[in-house]
Image (tube, rainbow, N blue to C red):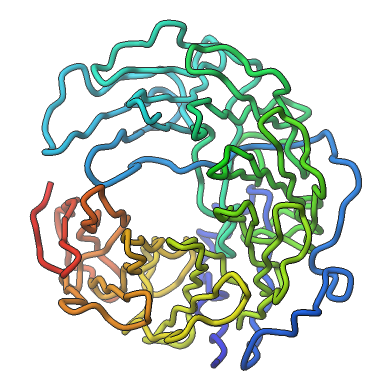
Length: 467
């Protein structure tokens, strides 16, 4: 597998970025290095590699939660729009799109997260003039009885580290467990913690619990610290944090720690576990195991009991965060060379899936508005219910790769050279929903009056309509 040119990731290139992110508690990314022709032997262990190692007692400082933000699907969703620290709007977007009575709801202060319960209740965690409040609204934008609920402290910033700029992709400080309970990340001057609440606004026994890592910092650019969380299909909660974080443009830390909590708030046997340096965020698989990428570029899978899974780690050509595909397969988007990025899929045994890696036909689109610099991270891919991988490419196109590694008939789809994709999702009907915008760049500065649209495509690549 060829190695990635350092220029794609290291060329941050402007004084503006340095000034913007210098105050965020993060630092330089690991160096790019070639990958091997195949995975390392299954006998590799944390002790031998100094990558993942058992940890002692869970430190009390720090913590937070990451969750899946809106839109939750492509059919209907709640969108959180905040301007500064003065007010936020929570908007309900039904299918077909249109004005919904009662929405949007205006919330004073700054909100860091929203989530929708299976019953259709929209929750929002906000810092208001009266303190931190967790709001709940029904489909008609009416406040649910028992809400809002006041919590001590303020909303805690949560992120998914993707080896780009700052702490990574900002997530929601609020999430919903499969049983309908609400998880909220809260920070004070000494620690960040996870609170768990019932749908009627009561606190669940055994919570709050702290997150690993450094204590919260000054709340500013980058939030009040780099940390995150994920929730498993059985309700277990994984929290991670970073120790010894250095102030710089990209996230650098002495150590990453992962803690797994049970429903009762207790640390599960075999946890916490650690990784040297600033590892990526982790994903929880259906069997309770987790997967992440270390700072040195190894993909790891840890079993539900915290032990190393056989066949892991797999050495990637550079540090790349995992994406979880249907069936528990792990997808990594690799910036292999200018003009031709690749995707690789690993199965649960740490082996490369048949038909992979595959070229994507171009460079993966980034959120950066500075030409080809991947300074703000890649646009995350989306997955169809059958495992189809949808990827947004630079130069205005979308592509679809089936689970066997073949381009799906009808794809790629061209959107126009000045059209940029900003978000991908798959709706409840299995259609691809792409948020796009017309934006100027260094190469194409002529785009005027940028338009933001939501485009919908069938699994066969047919344009269905727009919102």
